[in-house]
Length: 282
Ligand code: PAF
Image (tube, rainbow, N blue to C red; front, side, top):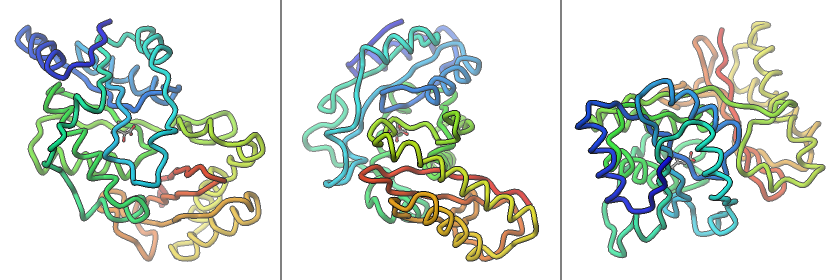
C-alpha cells in the first residue's frame, strides 16, 4: 500500500493506473476510521481495480466555533486498517498542500446545501463540495463511495457530480450501526458513558416513526413531533437541532408521507452533534 501526502504524486499515481486501463475507486474520509468507513472501503474494493482512500480533516467544512481542532485523528492506526482492507493508496495531505494561501475557488450546491445541516452549519457543504471536487480532480475516480449517514452530503455530491459532469459514479452505502443501533461516527468517542448509553434513543425514535408510518400515519408534522417527544422522554439531556421529513433527493420539506420520504435528524447530546436518518417507505 502506498501512502502519499503530495497532491502531485497522487495525480501522477492515478494517471499511471488509468494509462494501464485500470479503473479506480475513491473513498474520501476524514480519518479516525471505524467499521462504517471500512464497510465503504470493502464495497469500493469490489467496484474497481484500484482503491484510493483519502484521509483529510478538511478545514473549510468547519465553522469558526466547530470542532476542527479537537476532531479525532490517528493516522498510524488508520494506515493499518486501510492496509488490512486492501487499499492500494492512502492520500493524507496537510491542509497547506490542499489549499494555497490565496485559494479562491469554491463549489457549492446552495439549494441543497442550505437546509437541514446546512442551516445550522453555514458554509459546511461548500467546504465539502470544494474538497470533494479537488479529490475528484486529483484521482479522477470511476467510482466514489460515501455513507448514507450523511444523506444530505451524499445527495449534494450526487447532484454536483451530475450537474458538473464530473464523470464519476457516486455510490451510497447503508449506515453502519453499533449493537444498540447508534449510527457509527468518529465523534461518538466524545460522548460521556451516560450519553453514549442513552444515545441509542435516536435510532429508537426513527424506528418509532417508521412504525407509525406503517400503521398509516401520513402527517409529516405529527411524525416529526413524535420523534421529538420520544427524545424528550428517553434522552432528556439532548437538544434536537432538527427532525425533518424531506424528499430524499430534493431535500425539500414534505407535508404528507405519500412516497418514500427521508426523516433526517440532528441532535446535540452534550457537546456532540449526532446525525442519523431513515428512509420511510409507505
Ligand atoms: O464525510 C466526510 O468524512 C467528509 O465530509 C468528506 C466527504 C471526506 C469531505 O471532507
